[in-house]
Image 1 (cartoon, rainbow, N blue to C red):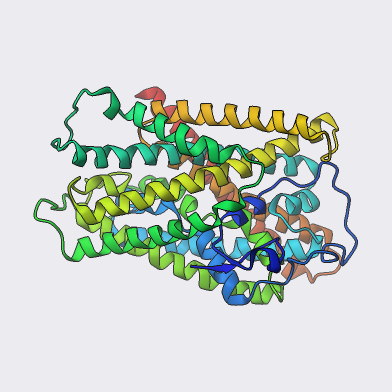
Image 2 (image 1 turned 180 degrees about the vertical axis):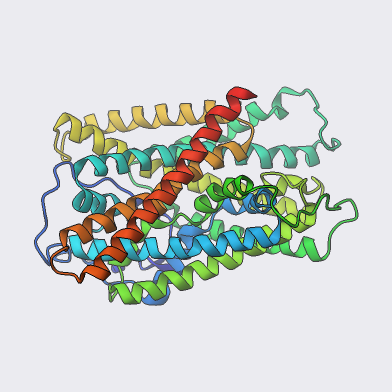
Length: 463
């Protein structure tokens, strides 16, 4: 799937597969941002207005879909079955789409072009810093999840290569999970994470997108033509409790979170209008919903309550079609980790320079040393945590709670603040309705984040 690149000269990149784009979308704003004058953002910016409506739809879909789809069958199981899972996704999709529209409205009103810049301009310094910290933590947690996914898929592939039965351990040091994850990380991920720019990954990203669609196709095919040993157990038809339904929300938030990159996509359109953007994000979310729903329903009905948090782990190791899917997922993660790390590193760099009062343009040698140190610390911490947190479900739950902040909390705060600043210009009925909706978004996001955090802390302590 190729599409027009964002924030770059059309003559330089032309048509590319959205790779370095997702990284640049999340970069921290300048250290000392000054308010822009109307029209300033577009002057001298050749990348603005280069994306068609169809291209914007593809970019949003690409930013939305990813390795998170592996967890949707387990989310359906947690929610209490197909009916509960579909209802939950459809209900949340209304808020997800509205959050994307709110961000475009606030971007247009504030004349800012990235998510955190919009939050800074509309909500103020404190909320802006909190937003940047949340982005850094979110990308850090997602990098941990990526490393765990690599280990999960490698375990299955190695089991086929060594011809071991399911669940058996050979005892060989070179097949140990900790060794294989570490070797892969040091050989591939670390070298890709150190460079200052990562635009060279645009070609590998195309295979990542193809792999995502291939995984969904395999899960659907395996449901209609299952292997004999794949028999579902305990197909739930109703949720055990309302709490169970809420526990599935973080996975859905993690899967549909494309809000951070949505603001630059909106500003890159040929006609960046809120009404047009509403159609773009609605179409994109419907496409993403179809992919996630197909994966979630077919994966859940194939294995029932026994489905693994990573659905590919539920399939037999020797299944060659699924083995190809595992290889695609590994490739997707290998190219996605450096992009997410770049995003987090850029935000951390911006926070550090702002705290130190240092200009962005400084000695190249100092920037290189700081970048290498930041990369090594980030890489080693995520690797160590991934080695000792084998359950991808726990990481997705925590990261999904943070994703709820980007989907609900920050857009809700932006809407409230924007309407408060226009209080005298808007009819009272419309003003109260929009402010109330903003409060609802913030409350919903805070509830998901709070519940996820409480579960992550207290459940482990009780266990």
